[in-house]
Amino acid sequence: MTDTYMTSSEAYREIRRGARKQGAVIKAILFKDLRIRLGKGRLGLLWVILEPMTQMFVLSALWYLAGRQKIDGVHVTMFIATGIIPYMILKVGINKIHHSIKSNVSLFDYQQVKPIDALLAAFILNLVLILFASIALFFVLDWFFEVSADFPNIPEMLGILAVLMCFSLGIGLLISVYGVFYESLPRFCNIITKPLIFISGVVYSVNDLPATTREVLSWNPLLQFIAYVRHYVLGLDLIPEANFVYIGLISAVTLFVGCLSYYVNRLKLLQR
Amino acid sequence: MIKFNNVSKYYTTPKGRKYVLQDVNLTIELHQKVGVLGRNGAGKSTLMRLLAGVDIPDQGTITRTGSISWPMGLATGLQGMLTGRENAKFTCGIQGVGKRATDRKLKFVQDFSELGNYFEMPVRTYSSGMKARLNFALAMAFNFDFYIIDELTSVGDQVFRDKSRQVFEKKRAKCGFIKVSHNLDELRNECDSGLLLHAGQLTHYPAIDDAVNAYEKLPGSEAEHRKGKAKAELRAVQKEKAARIRAAKKAAAKQQPVAAENTTSVANATALSTTQASLPGQRPTMVNGKPSGTVQQPIVKPLAISSPRPHKPAPMMPRVVRKAAPDG
Image (tube, rainbow over all chains, first blue to last red; front, side, top):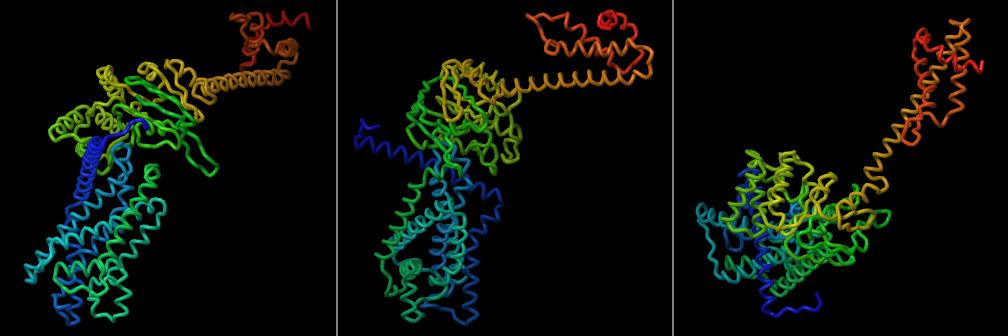
């Protein structure tokens, strides 16, 4: 329609209506996914909560065996917990959401449902599960180990987590969109997540490394994210290489490219 | 209203583009009841997806006003892992239905689909007929201006088909539908106008009968197929007859030594063969709608002779002999 222009209030109303519609769709898909997960067995859902905890205990057990109880003045288990949560948020984007395009393909027959809704629903559902897992984690730490984080900067912490989520979503969109065309891409990315846990300072402090190694490793955005999270959650000192502009920019670019790749291929994704 | 403006849709294959639609212009007014005809692979389902707005044309634009259902097909829109009820809930969710209205719609879907206890079972355990029922019931729970039905009605049993027709009768004034079916009688009875999709061309016929007739005339269409079948059958019958006649001749030749002195039988056989040879084209033909009796007579007789009972033909002989006499 070239001859009709919308006034700004009309456009605003239109956007709001569209957002409400899309919100309803995402909500419906989210609860559907949750129902499917529950249907497969409550144990599966319990495992989602327990997985980071077991990972944390296994890794901290290694430190215990090595005779170390504190890293950077923080209890080992707490130190690892604050590393694992950001790592898991990034993992959501890398290998948790790209299945949802394929598994929801029959729903794209509904005019309202688009692939992005399925992706967002999967993303949100996984984040919510991580939230519950994190709460359980801190609870267990406080209850059994009597270690608690003091959360000196809660707004900043939420801010850095939000940026990390944008980064994760951007990567997730890229992998999901191109994973439809190149099926080996998600598999390859899945392999990458394993070493990521060791080069991102999840299990050790980068302060223990030689300065040159640290400088190289700190190009890894996840390492910086984890440093920031520890800074805001535990009050640890930032590493000298930490640069908010760097990770902010990289997140913005990733999210932009991810959205762009979706937008460019949105019609191809609908075809079977 | 649905309006196609220079719409093209193609799929790329290793041998180039395969056009499903090529420069199609079309307007379907509100509340029209349209039947879609086309052979397998002509692109009817793609057309339905375009109409429903879940697929996008490669060229041109499609303007749609009013609400349009999802393409109601056999496997569309249902999640195998979820139960019928959960699927219905999901559909209500994406249509933005409130909680109380959802309960009402769920009740309707349950009653209408007549799935009984299967309503609480995962959809992957359903038969195709049950899936079709659920899908149909789901669509009926909502009021659309257009229902897009892709070969859904052909699956249900008679009772369900009658029921679905009754529902449409009720909604008739308020809604239209676009329907793909291979049941031509169903289309003739229920639709006003027709669309024929063939080789990338979409032709709109204001009267459904014209569309059906045009469909039946398509090369390789069902009617054509039926005609071909009839021809083949006729040919087979003719062949069989010829074989029987040949066998009769052989039998007659074998009989010769047995009834050697009965020269008339030999004469009989030769006479027959000559009559056959002289009248090749006229055998089973009809002249002006009446059997050409004079010609039929000698044809029927040899068949009687051909029966493997050499002694029987005796009573017939005089008649044949009389005929053969002038020759002999």
